[in-house]
Image (cartoon, rainbow, N blue to C red; front, side, top):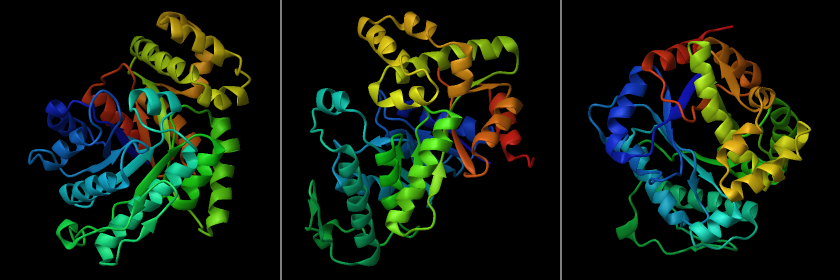
Length: 338
């Protein structure tokens, strides 16, 4: 199994960090839409001569506030810079962020994401094949493409367009129209097996396709000693508490019998009581919703959860900056044949 890890968002540090992670043996780097632009660190990593070629991915770029034309252009150029190693991962975000942080319009997120994926692919394929651009959707229209704005065929081909999803409607949508599904990191083994995979199967049946690439994501509390694991667990519990406070993520808690925790976390989040939120995440919840242990133990758990449906994993280490040696051990263990 291949290992993708997060490339921290600061573009001025991206090349150095990318070089260190690749030296540790990771197979790919992804960026998250946080306090910095989601594309710039990947551009820096792809364009730096001292950084060896590696797989790159946005995980995810928030699509609803962006034009499909912008997304297609960025994806095309990153495919060039990376030598054909780029994947465009898209996500929808939740209503408060779309309306109050991005100042954009929120409605029918699955329908919007479906159309965005189709529009981006239509634009990229138009450039690749030289066909007339004529995409007419409910939310966006792309019918004007003068020759001066056509980059021509990408020598590395059209980059894949992936869609992040958690709920059944968005997951079905990904399986219908995207090139891959990014399984959101807040999930449990039961939720993945009983909710995500059946929705994937339904989406494939609707589209007439046989398969889709599945890219699971895991929140990982990892360390080489009990003390390191305990320290990593604090950051993991903080991220789990943040996700758990969001109403959209309640179905994951519901399936495990912890649904009543969501409004408690949400109430604490509104008062800024971060420590109170973390205190509600016990070790049983953490080990159910995240992967915990030494690098070898984490690799074994990841392969148990996802090894039969995916050949690579996106690992998050919230609050932890692991040594190259620790990451190298995880990457080695993931590649090891059972």
